[in-house]
Amino acid sequence: MNKIALITGATAGIGKATALLLAENSYNVIITGRRQELLDEMKKEIEVKHKRNALSLCFDVRNQQEVEKAIGSIPSGWKNIDVLVNNAGLAVGLNPVQNGIIDDWERMIDTNIKGLLYVTQSVLPIMIERGKGHIVNIGSIAGVQVYENGNVYCASKHAVNALSKGIRIDLLKHGIKVSEIRPGLAETEFSIVRFKGDKEAAKKPYIGLQPLSGNDVADAVLYVITRPKHVNINDLEITPTTQANSYYVFRK
Image (cartoon, rainbow, N blue to C red; front, side, top):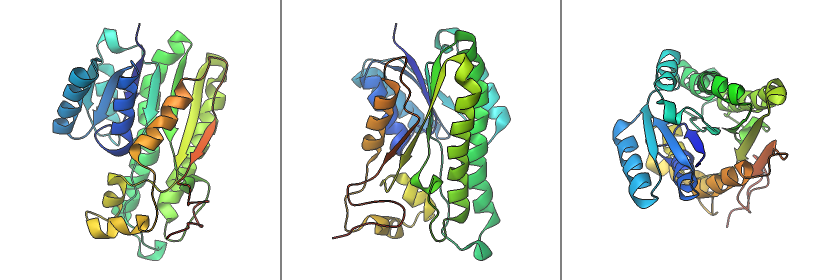
């Protein structure tokens, strides 16, 4: 029987690449996001190109009621979720805290922290009942190293790092794996969101280097979830070859 993976934020970037790669590797996938038209396109691509089953759920991870309703609506044939990839996340703005925009802060905290918690708590009863499962949280190197003007985004990803560790401890007795993958510079829709649609500004962090792609991070997800039953990858940090950490990047 094919395994089932649920991926949040699956309509673009790392989430989309992960959903497609898992489908290519015989997973049936539950894809979630806020843009129904993109979910419909993804579902068709997975079913036609990869010959795998796909279920789409349109909801905002920031809304607890929407999350509970969507997860609760999953048909019986899809309920035995083997892998949850908490990918939905964003950075908005790049201001020093004294000039920060509160709406930006709330979007990051509500998506990156609370959204992860809402989805995880909704999916966990299924995994606990079965005594198995794997949660993969997409964090960031910003979750271990703070950089200038990263304040709230870095704080939200530090929270993902702490939650990954805490949830792993909570679920040890249930046989459920918890992993965190922390990408460095990755060129996806992420940067466009951070710079609020300014595509020229969004390109600047990647000038002079070859950044990670969504596919690179998806490869890491696949590696983590395909280890033997007795092996768990707790943390996996992945950066471009020319990036040492949040502070040091070599540009040509």
